[in-house]
Image 1 (cartoon, rainbow, N blue to C red):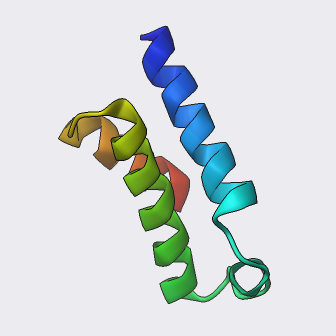
Image 2 (cartoon, rainbow, N blue to C red):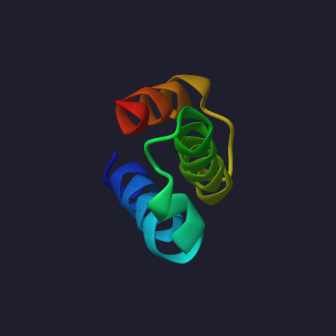
Image 3 (tube, helix red, strand yellow):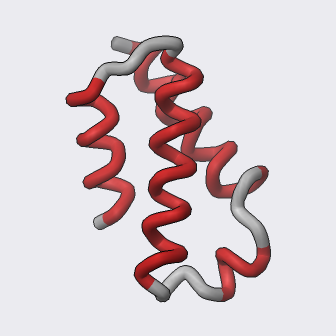
Length: 66
């Protein structure tokens, strides 16, 4: 469980500070940009977990979207 939390945190940090462009930050209120950002964080989470855990990824997607 702790490994999963570290993975999710790492994915979030990568998605927010490395993979998110200035344009995305400036336009984050636009629905499409928000979806793109959430998709990036979810995809990075999946890649770092090394497996497709659909329930965990769905929770990440929904929580990050909200």
